[in-house]
Length: 256
Figure 1 (cartoon, rainbow, N blue to C red):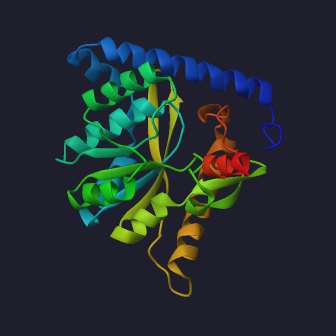
Figure 2: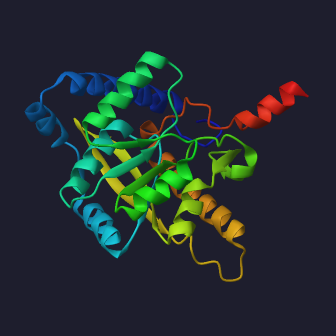
C-alpha cells in the first residue's frame, strides 16, 4: 500500500482485514441459511440501477464477458449478479481456480452451485466459455490473478510495480465478439454495491494485431481496476500474491 501511494496504509489494511473477516462469516452464514433468509440477505446487496441496466442492455446486444476481481465480498457479488441475470433467463458462468485447501474448495464449489452459478475450471476454459456464451450465459473471468504461464498474459503496471495480467478475458471477447465489462464490488453497510467500471472494446483491431489488441485491452482493464483500488483500497484483496511470476515459469526455473 505504501508503494502504491495509499495515504494511510495501516488504517486501510485494518479496514481490508475487517471486510475480509465479515465476508468469510457472510458466506458461512449463507451456507446454512434457508432460501427465504438467503433472499433477505442478498436483498441488502445490489447492482445499482445504471449497472443493472447496462449489463442487461449489453446482454441483449450479444455475448458478455465480465472482467471481475477480488473486490468487496466477491462471492456475494457473484450471487447477486447471478440472481439478477436469472430474472432474464440467463445464467452466470464463472471461471475459477480451485482453492489449495481441499475441503474449503469443496465447500465453496457447493455453495456457488447452490446459488445457480455454473463453474468452469481454468483447464479448457476458453472452449467451455465460448460454449457458455453461445448458450446465452454471461461469463466471468478474474483479471487480478497471475496466469499459469507468461505467454497467456502480458506485463502491466499495477499499484506501483510490474505484474502479469491474464489476457484470457480479452481473448475470449475477441473470439466471440462479446462486450467486455470491468466490474467491481464494494461494501456498503451490510451489503455489496456492484458497479461497472468500464466497457472495453477488445474486438477493434484496426492498425493492431489481434494479440496486441488483446494485450492493450488487458492493460486498459487493469488500469481501470487500479483506479478503483486507489479510490477504495479497503475493498481489494491486497494480501494475495498478485506480483509473483507465473507458476509455469517458476517450475521451469526450478527444473533448470
